[in-house]
Image 1: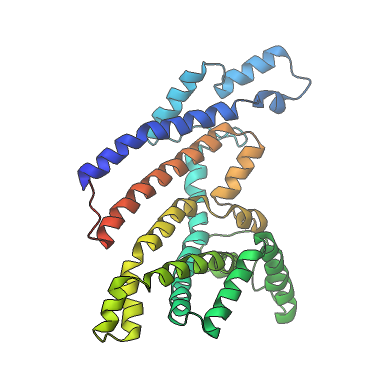
Image 2 (image 1 turned 30 degrees about the vertical axis):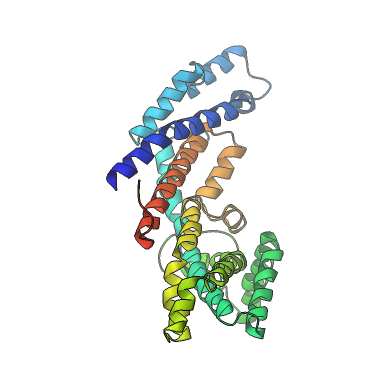
Length: 317
């Protein structure tokens, strides 16, 4: 297995380096110095600022410095718009806040969606199945932004009027496990409601396809109870597409939900990354994107390993 992992890592090194280079090329299509100094800056001010930001050296020298910092995990580059703050400090403070939002949302969504999908497949064609599919399609059809607006209005503003005191925060964040329900529970619920529609439809299609497989027919012919066939035999064999969907989602856990973080004022990676893009803060954008790209590649490799764990027919060769 380790030979497979090392080989996959080596194969993906050129891909990772190409992602970093493409990002740097796209960022440098606009010169951020002119926006920082304004119209009244002199030519010497312009030259000094480029030297201060490290933009006066050739592109490939800048690229080499960034790759070296990634390899050594040295994110000590200074943030351009916040004097005295490093990219590493922004990264290590933003990641836990994003995880506090996305990890509970993913766990709750996955468990509930799989259970509903199996229940729908179990009662396929009956009124329970049709009702569950109706709500799943309804969840997919409404925009994420609509759920956020309605959630903030009814789940925070109106609920506060009915109860007489704030129950959920509309905007802002304060760390701490005891503060989590007040600041995070509402965006987590919104994320679960939105994602459940997509996940339920996907998992239901997987489960319905599995019900037609030969091993299901054999298990039923041997007299196995229908519940055991559905919730034991079928679930294990349906793990490959389930693992694929969950593992593809994992890198996005770190970046967080950009819309939720933006509208609820949660300073996670999505919120910080959007602010850095608006302010042309190259070190923050480069550092955050490098972490995200690395996590995405690692999740793909981990997916292949989990395939072999859940399905003995898959070999890591």
